[in-house]
Image (cartoon, rainbow, N blue to C red; front, side, top):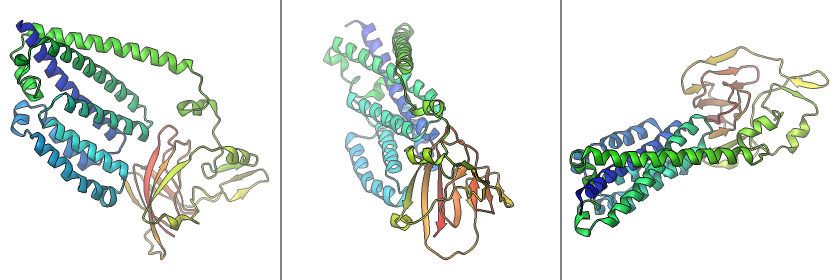
Length: 379
């Protein structure tokens, strides 16, 4: 068998390994930018992820298939502990499980099936990030993910084609363990062969990426849209949703009754029945001139310019303490909805101000970003 085929196979196998690892890193970055990963979870993932680019370290810490399976099954009890007691969220605990499996896969001998798992797990990360953020930076990272994903699929197809051209004896020790392929190509393959393989993959990937982007853009603007996603802000005028403005004109109540847009989602920690009769306060309108309700009474504002945890009430009020988490959809004003006797707020809300006249709380407007915060109130 010609040596250039073997050299090309080694080069493509190494590039395929690196691209799969990059997909895992991009998926994690998208979750981090969506504010779904805490700082210590990020640290626990980033350190082993960076170390996985060192072939000698991976070989020294390599996990056998049996040990990898044992570690994965051992994580299952911790998954339920995380879901019910630590993060108290099925989504967060599932994301932690995905990150754990990715780290395990990075340090075990990999066949094509294991690489397929890495690709699928990275796609699940992108899927989760897409449903938890509408930030513009998501588009940039998604385009990077799409380019790397196309390159990975092209490299995988070229790798399989070369494998079919090679005998079983030549494949032994190369196709079974990706770390060997990753490690053994640093100096073995000639620069000409490595350059040819890399250029071919990137050329095909970039052409496919641009073609996909162009066709997607044509379909995106050709298919008519009726107030969905970003176009909802263009097609429709801002709605007079109750509590979302400090000025409401009579006649706008018809829009309130007919509109079915989701304003916010709330998750309560503990027994949700305590909120059966609870009211959510945004802003209190105290003045009526015959046509319009507006807010005239304003107290001395209490302003918080920095931080992510805000103590709003030091009084030892008696009642039932309720903890809740709110996901508020994009809105042109900054009023936050809380339950009565709000004690504490937590989230990326600074600058934050509280009006002592009606206990209304306002942060910066979030016309294009979903806002998430946690609160503690006493009913």
